[in-house]
Amino acid sequence: FFAGTMAENKEIVLRQPGEAGRQRTVSLASSSQVSAIASLAKKELALPPDEELTIVHNGRIMAASESLQGVADGDVVWVVAASQPPTRRDPPQPPAPEEGGRQGRVG
Image 1: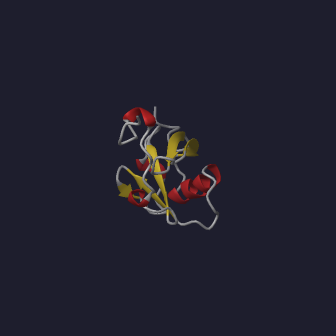
Image 2: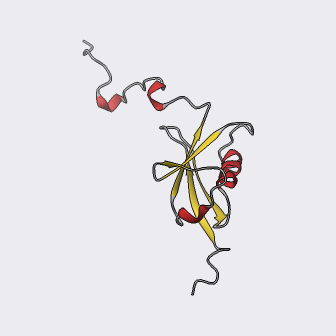
């Protein structure tokens, strides 16, 4: 039954935090290391090659040398770039018109 599990590929969803965060689904071998996710993420998410990335899975920061054994097929892995400011520092979004963006009524 389990003969082929080591070489099997997993579909992993790479996601960036924040409203504008990009998302890509990539296929990686189970035996791959977390560093492979990082280099793939740089390509897929158009990040600078020297960007420092933190890979987070299920709320836990993964080490670059860790294997993907603990990541299940279809799991979301967060890719947090060092240069990316924390979400709370993002400029406030103007309210959408349908939410009554104007305080006073005109006329």
